[in-house]
Length: 243
Image 1 (cartoon, rainbow, N blue to C red):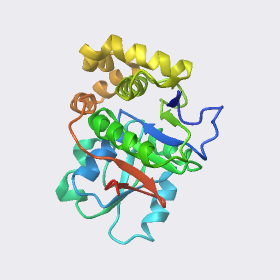
Image 2: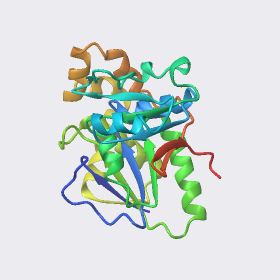
Image 3: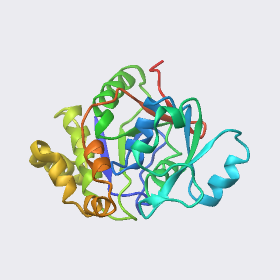
Image 4: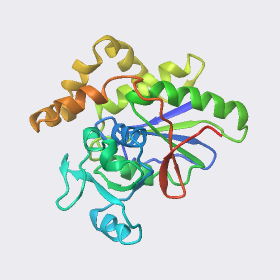
Protein backbone atom coordinates (compact mmCIF):
# COMPACT_ATOMS: atom_id res chain seq x y z
CA UNK A 1 0.00 0.00 0.00
CA UNK A 2 1.35 3.43 -0.93
CA UNK A 3 1.50 5.94 1.95
CA UNK A 4 2.69 9.52 1.48
CA UNK A 5 3.28 11.75 4.50
CA UNK A 6 3.12 15.55 4.23
CA UNK A 7 4.84 17.72 6.86
CA UNK A 8 2.25 20.44 7.45
CA UNK A 9 -1.00 22.08 6.45
CA UNK A 10 -0.47 24.33 3.47
CA UNK A 11 2.24 22.04 2.09
CA UNK A 12 3.53 23.63 -1.13
CA UNK A 13 3.29 20.31 -2.94
CA UNK A 14 -0.16 18.89 -2.41
CA UNK A 15 -0.43 15.51 -4.17
CA UNK A 16 -3.34 14.37 -6.29
CA UNK A 17 -6.03 13.43 -3.76
CA UNK A 18 -9.01 12.42 -5.89
CA UNK A 19 -8.29 8.68 -5.52
CA UNK A 20 -6.69 8.76 -2.06
CA UNK A 21 -7.84 8.24 1.49
CA UNK A 22 -6.55 11.17 3.53
CA UNK A 23 -5.61 10.91 7.20
CA UNK A 24 -5.32 14.23 9.04
CA UNK A 25 -3.23 14.32 12.22
CA UNK A 26 -2.97 17.19 14.71
CA UNK A 27 -1.93 15.55 17.98
CA UNK A 28 -1.65 18.80 19.99
CA UNK A 29 -4.55 19.18 19.93
CA UNK A 30 -7.25 19.47 17.30
CA UNK A 31 -7.65 15.88 16.12
CA UNK A 32 -7.31 14.55 19.67
CA UNK A 33 -10.03 16.96 20.75
CA UNK A 34 -12.30 16.03 17.82
CA UNK A 35 -12.03 12.33 18.70
CA UNK A 36 -12.81 13.11 22.34
CA UNK A 37 -15.78 15.33 21.49
CA UNK A 38 -17.40 12.61 19.37
CA UNK A 39 -16.76 10.03 22.08
CA UNK A 40 -18.56 12.32 24.51
CA UNK A 41 -21.69 12.56 22.39
CA UNK A 42 -21.00 15.57 20.17
CA UNK A 43 -23.26 15.29 17.14
CA UNK A 44 -20.72 16.73 14.69
CA UNK A 45 -17.70 19.00 14.40
CA UNK A 46 -17.80 21.60 11.63
CA UNK A 47 -14.26 22.76 10.75
CA UNK A 48 -13.85 26.32 9.49
CA UNK A 49 -10.83 28.48 8.75
CA UNK A 50 -11.47 31.70 10.65
CA UNK A 51 -13.26 32.92 13.74
CA UNK A 52 -15.35 35.20 11.53
CA UNK A 53 -16.50 32.22 9.48
CA UNK A 54 -17.34 30.39 12.71
CA UNK A 55 -19.49 33.27 13.95
CA UNK A 56 -21.34 33.46 10.64
CA UNK A 57 -21.87 29.69 10.55
CA UNK A 58 -23.38 29.68 14.03
CA UNK A 59 -26.19 31.93 12.81
CA UNK A 60 -27.32 29.11 10.50
CA UNK A 61 -27.10 26.27 13.06
CA UNK A 62 -29.32 26.89 16.11
CA UNK A 63 -27.89 25.51 19.34
CA UNK A 64 -24.37 25.09 17.99
CA UNK A 65 -21.26 25.88 20.01
CA UNK A 66 -18.06 27.67 19.00
CA UNK A 67 -14.77 25.95 19.73
CA UNK A 68 -11.13 26.51 18.88
CA UNK A 69 -7.95 28.39 19.59
CA UNK A 70 -5.46 30.95 18.44
CA UNK A 71 -1.93 30.71 19.79
CA UNK A 72 -3.14 27.70 21.86
CA UNK A 73 -5.67 29.77 23.84
CA UNK A 74 -9.46 29.95 23.62
CA UNK A 75 -10.75 32.57 21.19
CA UNK A 76 -12.48 35.48 22.89
CA UNK A 77 -16.23 34.98 22.88
CA UNK A 78 -16.06 31.25 22.07
CA UNK A 79 -17.72 28.58 24.18
CA UNK A 80 -14.84 26.09 24.11
CA UNK A 81 -11.10 26.11 23.59
CA UNK A 82 -8.98 23.40 22.01
CA UNK A 83 -8.49 21.27 25.11
CA UNK A 84 -10.08 17.81 24.99
CA UNK A 85 -11.10 18.37 28.60
CA UNK A 86 -13.38 21.22 27.50
CA UNK A 87 -15.50 18.81 25.44
CA UNK A 88 -17.28 16.97 28.24
CA UNK A 89 -20.66 15.27 27.69
CA UNK A 90 -22.64 17.85 29.61
CA UNK A 91 -21.36 20.57 27.24
CA UNK A 92 -21.21 18.89 23.84
CA UNK A 93 -23.63 15.97 24.10
CA UNK A 94 -26.13 16.10 21.23
CA UNK A 95 -24.77 19.39 19.88
CA UNK A 96 -22.74 20.54 16.90
CA UNK A 97 -19.46 22.38 17.46
CA UNK A 98 -18.12 24.84 14.89
CA UNK A 99 -14.34 24.67 15.28
CA UNK A 100 -11.42 26.72 14.06
CA UNK A 101 -7.81 26.05 15.05
CA UNK A 102 -4.48 27.36 13.86
CA UNK A 103 -3.41 24.20 12.07
CA UNK A 104 -5.81 21.26 12.37
CA UNK A 105 -8.98 22.59 10.80
CA UNK A 106 -6.91 24.13 8.01
CA UNK A 107 -5.39 20.73 7.23
CA UNK A 108 -8.87 19.22 7.04
CA UNK A 109 -10.14 21.91 4.72
CA UNK A 110 -7.01 21.58 2.54
CA UNK A 111 -7.98 17.94 1.94
CA UNK A 112 -11.48 18.39 0.54
CA UNK A 113 -10.54 17.08 -2.92
CA UNK A 114 -10.15 13.59 -1.43
CA UNK A 115 -13.11 11.17 -1.52
CA UNK A 116 -12.44 10.13 2.09
CA UNK A 117 -10.95 12.18 4.95
CA UNK A 118 -10.44 10.56 8.34
CA UNK A 119 -9.23 12.11 11.57
CA UNK A 120 -6.43 10.41 13.52
CA UNK A 121 -4.47 10.84 16.72
CA UNK A 122 -2.63 8.63 19.14
CA UNK A 123 -5.79 8.16 21.18
CA UNK A 124 -7.75 6.45 18.36
CA UNK A 125 -4.95 4.96 16.25
CA UNK A 126 -5.87 1.29 16.52
CA UNK A 127 -9.45 1.97 15.45
CA UNK A 128 -8.27 4.06 12.49
CA UNK A 129 -5.90 1.34 11.27
CA UNK A 130 -8.50 -1.41 11.51
CA UNK A 131 -11.07 0.75 9.72
CA UNK A 132 -8.62 1.56 6.91
CA UNK A 133 -7.75 -2.09 6.34
CA UNK A 134 -11.47 -2.88 6.06
CA UNK A 135 -12.02 0.04 3.69
CA UNK A 136 -9.25 -0.98 1.30
CA UNK A 137 -10.56 -4.54 1.26
CA UNK A 138 -13.93 -3.38 -0.04
CA UNK A 139 -13.07 -0.22 -1.99
CA UNK A 140 -10.96 -1.01 -5.04
CA UNK A 141 -11.04 2.59 -6.30
CA UNK A 142 -8.68 3.89 -3.62
CA UNK A 143 -5.09 4.13 -4.84
CA UNK A 144 -3.30 4.90 -1.60
CA UNK A 145 -3.15 6.99 1.55
CA UNK A 146 -1.97 10.55 2.13
CA UNK A 147 -1.18 11.43 5.74
CA UNK A 148 -1.33 15.17 6.36
CA UNK A 149 0.44 16.26 9.51
CA UNK A 150 -1.12 19.58 10.49
CA UNK A 151 2.26 20.87 11.66
CA UNK A 152 2.80 24.11 13.52
CA UNK A 153 2.18 27.22 11.43
CA UNK A 154 3.46 25.62 8.20
CA UNK A 155 6.42 24.00 9.96
CA UNK A 156 7.42 20.43 10.77
CA UNK A 157 5.89 19.22 14.04
CA UNK A 158 7.45 16.35 15.99
CA UNK A 159 4.26 15.07 17.73
CA UNK A 160 2.34 14.86 14.44
CA UNK A 161 5.23 13.12 12.70
CA UNK A 162 5.56 10.60 15.54
CA UNK A 163 1.86 9.85 15.20
CA UNK A 164 2.26 9.37 11.45
CA UNK A 165 5.08 6.96 12.25
CA UNK A 166 2.86 5.00 14.62
CA UNK A 167 0.24 4.76 11.88
CA UNK A 168 2.79 3.50 9.35
CA UNK A 169 4.21 0.98 11.81
CA UNK A 170 0.71 -0.36 12.51
CA UNK A 171 -0.08 -0.65 8.80
CA UNK A 172 2.78 -3.11 8.31
CA UNK A 173 6.11 -3.47 6.57
CA UNK A 174 4.74 -3.92 3.04
CA UNK A 175 3.75 -0.25 2.73
CA UNK A 176 5.48 1.88 0.08
CA UNK A 177 6.58 5.15 1.72
CA UNK A 178 7.94 8.54 0.73
CA UNK A 179 11.03 9.80 2.55
CA UNK A 180 9.10 11.60 5.27
CA UNK A 181 7.09 8.43 5.85
CA UNK A 182 10.33 6.47 6.32
CA UNK A 183 11.63 9.15 8.68
CA UNK A 184 8.36 9.18 10.64
CA UNK A 185 8.54 5.42 11.14
CA UNK A 186 12.16 5.65 12.34
CA UNK A 187 11.29 8.48 14.74
CA UNK A 188 8.39 6.52 16.17
CA UNK A 189 10.45 3.36 16.61
CA UNK A 190 13.13 5.29 18.48
CA UNK A 191 10.58 7.02 20.74
CA UNK A 192 7.93 4.34 21.23
CA UNK A 193 8.99 3.47 24.77
CA UNK A 194 9.17 7.09 25.95
CA UNK A 195 6.54 8.78 23.79
CA UNK A 196 5.25 11.26 26.37
CA UNK A 197 8.74 12.47 27.26
CA UNK A 198 9.63 12.96 23.60
CA UNK A 199 6.47 14.98 22.98
CA UNK A 200 6.98 16.92 26.21
CA UNK A 201 10.38 18.04 24.89
CA UNK A 202 9.07 19.14 21.48
CA UNK A 203 8.59 22.84 20.73
CA UNK A 204 4.81 22.49 20.72
CA UNK A 205 4.90 20.37 23.86
CA UNK A 206 6.99 22.93 25.74
CA UNK A 207 4.61 25.68 24.72
CA UNK A 208 1.54 23.83 25.98
CA UNK A 209 3.26 23.06 29.28
CA UNK A 210 4.20 26.72 29.71
CA UNK A 211 0.52 27.62 29.27
CA UNK A 212 -0.63 25.10 31.87
CA UNK A 213 -1.78 22.35 29.49
CA UNK A 214 0.51 19.49 30.53
CA UNK A 215 -2.53 17.32 31.32
CA UNK A 216 -3.67 17.83 27.72
CA UNK A 217 -0.25 16.77 26.44
CA UNK A 218 -0.21 13.55 28.45
CA UNK A 219 -3.75 12.66 27.40
CA UNK A 220 -3.12 13.40 23.72
CA UNK A 221 0.04 11.25 23.80
CA UNK A 222 -1.73 8.15 25.14
CA UNK A 223 -2.35 5.52 22.44
CA UNK A 224 -5.59 3.66 21.78
CA UNK A 225 -7.93 4.86 24.50
CA UNK A 226 -10.97 5.68 22.35
CA UNK A 227 -12.55 3.44 19.64
CA UNK A 228 -13.61 6.34 17.44
CA UNK A 229 -13.22 6.73 13.65
CA UNK A 230 -14.13 10.33 12.75
CA UNK A 231 -14.85 11.02 9.07
CA UNK A 232 -15.31 14.32 7.27
CA UNK A 233 -18.34 14.28 5.00
CA UNK A 234 -20.64 16.98 3.66
CA UNK A 235 -18.82 19.64 5.63
CA UNK A 236 -19.00 17.90 9.02
CA UNK A 237 -16.89 15.48 11.02
CA UNK A 238 -18.99 12.63 12.38
CA UNK A 239 -18.39 9.26 14.00
CA UNK A 240 -18.21 6.61 11.27
CA UNK A 241 -20.32 3.53 11.89
CA UNK A 242 -18.26 1.55 9.38
CA UNK A 243 -21.25 0.91 7.15
